[in-house]
Amino acid sequence: MKQPIMICLDLEGVLIPEVWLAVAERTQIDDLLISTRDIPDYDTLMTKRLEVLAAHSIGIDDVRDAVDSLDPLDGAVEFLEALREAYQVVILSDTFYDFITPLMRKLHYPTLFSHSLDVDSDGRILNYHLRQPDQKRASVMAFKSLNFRVLAAGDSYNDTTMLQSADKGIFFRPPDSIVKEFPQFPVTQTYAELREQFDRGASLTE
Image (tube, rainbow, N blue to C red):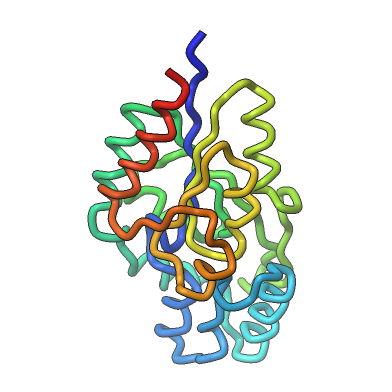
């Protein structure tokens, strides 16, 4: 039997702009410019972000406004639609269900595995909750246990365990520092290159 294919994609930096960079630009708060491209430990990163939000009285509505102002990356919608015609596709992201809906709508609602926030009645973001620790790797391993061949693509430190666990992992527009640290993954810069890598990975099952 031909093994079915599951493609796992990161969201920010692969299909949409970095949300927290948009919040930083909208609020003019430079301390929010840090991302998973800069800090490998996600808990450290999110703890810092929550501290900055509290210090500047930035609430969930401010984040939602920033998200609503964004559009998918050029070509992302067409790339994702074509990919979903050929393969099963799931988005594995460290974003949050609480504010990402506007961009999911613009991507025509692909399946998203993500996390959640604690928000009080005044809209203050109090805490965050991981759906599962290292959920990208755990999801890949779960799909493999269901006899899928898993191909994955991402751009940041928080994607590397996903790429390592997949049958084939691919970088999409990563920073040079991460490429040097993880030279085993092919690097793509365009959706055409990424699709070619996926098709090559899928053909190994035939």
